[in-house]
Every structure is written in C-alpha cells, then in structure tokens.
Image (cartoon, rainbow, N blue to C red; front, side):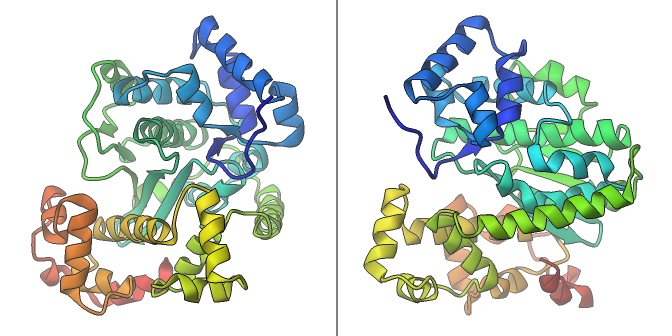
Length: 358
C-alpha cells in the first residue's frame, strides 16, 4: 500500500468526489480513480472525513497519455459540474458575498482548499487581474487545473451575480478543437493564445451585487477563514513558507537569509525543499515570474516600477530575467497585449501607490 504524501498539489475533496460521481468522466475512468485511491489506503468517504485534498497526480495515472487539449477539455467539463457546496470552508462566504469584489477577496484563502492552483490578484485603475498559475509540476496537469479554476470562476460569478459579459478568461495555450462549444456557452468570454493565463474583471463587474448577499454570514465566515489560514501556516510546506517570505520582501535573494528567517540551517532548508521536489532557486524564480507577469498586465504601472517592486535595482537585469522566463522582453510581452512597447507615457501618480495594494 502506498501512502499519500503530506505536501503535494491537490484539489478540494468534495469537488473531486462530485466530479467522480458526475457525467464529466466515464465509468472506466472513475473505476481507475478508485483503484488508485484503494492502493493508497483511502476512498471518497475518507477524503471527505479527513478533509484531504485529492492529489492531482492521480489524473496522470488515470489518463497516462493526457495532453494539453484533453486536459483543457477535462478542466472545462469538471467546472461545469462544480457546485456552490464544492469548496469546503469557502462555500458559505461564496454564497453570502454581497458583491463580485467580495467574491474576489476569497482568492486569498484558496490555499485552504487547493494547492494545485495559485491565483495572483492585482488591482488596477480599470478593475482586477487574477493571474492563474498551475503548481502541479506537470505542464499538462497545469493546463487542467488552470482551465478548471478559470472556468469555475466564470461559472460561479454567473450563478451568484448573473451573467457578466465583461469578465473574460484568458488562457496561454492554443484552443483545442473541443473548446468551441464550451466557449460558445460562455458567450465568447474565453480567449486562447494569450501571453499568460488570467481572469480580467473590469471595475463595473466588481460593483455588481450578488443574489444571496448576507453581510453577517460573510463577516463570520471571513473571520473563520483568517483563523484557519493562520493555523495552516504552521503546517504548510517549506516551499510555501519561502513564498510567503518573498511576498513580504521580494529582495530575499539568498537561501541562507531565508533559512535564518525560518530558524533552520541552510542545509536543512535545502533538504526539505528537495523532499518537496524543488529548490530555493526554483521557488524564487517561479514566484518572481508569476508576479512580473501579473504586474505587467497592468498598463498603468511602468516597467521600471515593476522591476523596482520585485527588488531589481537594475532594469536591464530584470529585462534579461523576464526574457529567460518567458522568451520575451517586458516590452515585447506588453506589445503582445496591445499596450504600447514603451509604457512610460502611461504612468500616473497612482502607479507607484499601487504597489501598496498588492
């Protein structure tokens, strides 16, 4: 019998169980999932009772030849079967939120129910950009969780606030042939071949009132979520702890400095990260790439300001790093988004202040 790992990318247990018992997958695939679960000493009831996330790697075992197109199709199909009860401690605040803006606030608590998808919420003058990054260590499974997460956002907003035609999901890979029908069902609000994956929520949509608003229930639920997140900080992976330190200070460039803040030796930090399948450099580079992309999506922030936000003292060093991560310079990246290559003329006094809003 193979034991489930303590730290690994997973999805909410109730959402997984609902998917397993829906028409989103065929009986043969459901049977293969249950075989994998039995081998690891668990089942649907145990996952729910223990509130354990279902490891995303199970999808690779059940679909060994899964590619990007099939992963996208599965992600969309799973999203169509998501219920408002699917998301554990986030379900009550979702239903009781008073506005779309309050729904978006809940993304800060996503780690409580899933470690496979990381959102990056960045406010702008015209609304919010929610960057979506998969953390499965498998490119195709990343497509699955991003397609699932992004399309679930659209579906939940439709359920809670009515159809919002201005909210758009952007995905950074080509559209599979099977996506046409799903795109049509979402009113053309899915765009493929984007420079990165994200959801764009304009300001007018943020102000939309939700159908089941309950301010008291929302406040109580948010307080409970904050307590749960603080409690979780004592049990999270070392990679996540490094990310939290980077959130506080992007200038954490050396593992020795981070190890000292975590009250462990450098060798212990290296060993613990290796046990989680990563290194300090990989965690830091991944975090910097995610933040850089999300910030560059906002044309009101200059490239120089983005570099400064990420503790790059030299714009040239930031540009070289960004090109290494994405294959494009920051200016080329913005050009693919339809923004002028030189964004200095778009800077505003609010630009520098925006750094305090992240």
